[in-house]
Image 1: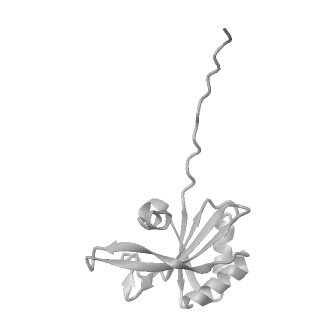
Image 2: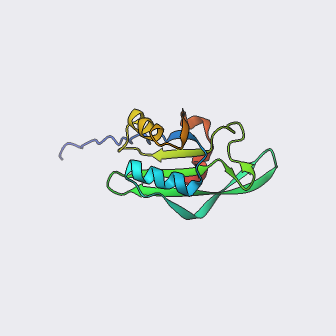
Image 3: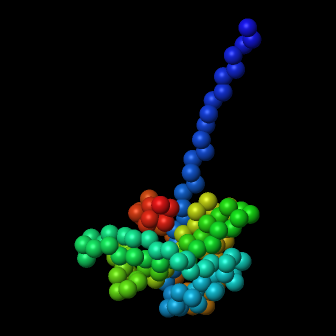
Length: 142
């Protein structure tokens, strides 16, 4: 009888999300256009929304978002407006107008991405956040 081969199964750790807060007076369609131009992507408003329970109002709120998936580099882009229908998605961050979320980012190094975002005339400030601070990720991926 031949020697039994032993194989070890390993899983790659899921790459965490990158979350950037954007302060801008632009309307969502205008910021989306600017991001599409500067990043070479094609964010589009989805027909879907995700539902979040807001403890402040003790009710569920629906949030719409823009989405683009780069099929070649397998990077997913989400753009979510922080304030929708008079409710804040992240009430503890009222100075943030939008959240740009990248999943499996293989195309835009963080420093290069932030430089590009800051070059948009209507963008006042960019903030980078740790993905572990946000429950938002669970809503976008479910």
